[in-house]
Length: 320
Ligand SMILES: Cc1cc2nc3c(=O)[nH]c(=O)nc-3n(C[C@H](O)[C@H](O)[C@H](O)COP(=O)(O)O)c2cc1C
Image (cartoon, rainbow, N blue to C red; front, side):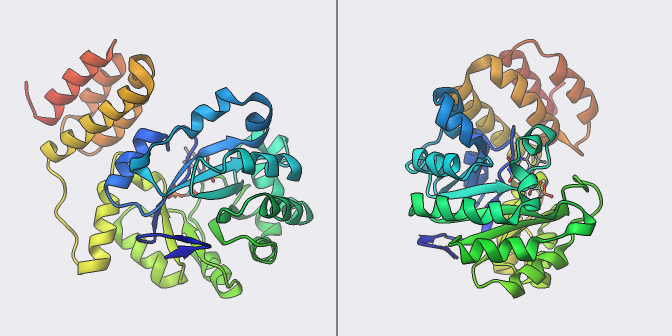
């Protein structure tokens, strides 16, 4: 799999997810086989005008590469300046053109850009001039059902020099409701010469294979399906390679990964933030297991990381 000058070991990517895809999460997903991981979206204005605080989101280390850095904004010049500022923070640059969040859209960024194809062209042109890094954009199908224009936006991106396009085939108006329209990924793949990456509703290994077979996409991206389930990546890679799905992880297997995630988090962010963030991950890691609902209550009432870790060990090892 190749995107511009970047050669990747496979075509299974971790989605950029604000509030989720931080360094520890990416390290876990990388260990389970992700061929490319993405940062959370980072504000171009923040990078240009605030600097240090925004750069926190770009924390990285050598174990997780190759890394895609995602930026968002609406001004072509500022996005180009931001592209230069992050040039050494990752191996690939992605521009967010799909975020549906009100605050982002009100600033003219994210999915608001889908309503301004000319601006999209100006943005990609000016960022392309500013950096020689592989450049991708991530879009939705359109603003709403009556204005689906992913084919037009994808084509603009290609003509302005983008190296690949990721499509999450829902409109901005849909948010996360309904099902993602994988047939849009197929149509985009038919339209473009550059690689197309499919994102949306991959919750088990078979989903990934169906998206690939049905759409012909060059890579698939894992988002919510990876919550508490990095084994999904391993399962997809195994199913593709050996046509067999490995057995489900035992509680001990899960504990090992959870504790690793815990330690990576503590190392990066310290105990206060780890307590808050790991609560969410632990609820996901325990989903579907016997005793999960009382564990979740314990997780949410734990007052410190030591108490949380103790409860975690006891739950996964089924200790009384
Ligand atoms: C909590 C959350 C945060 C997200 N943040 C981003 C983001 O920062 N940038 C982006 O391009 N997409 C973002 N997305 C969209 C995902 O990258 C992905 O395209 C979408 O969730 C569909 O894939 P899925 O069904 O596999 O989750 C986010 C999605 C979720 C659920």
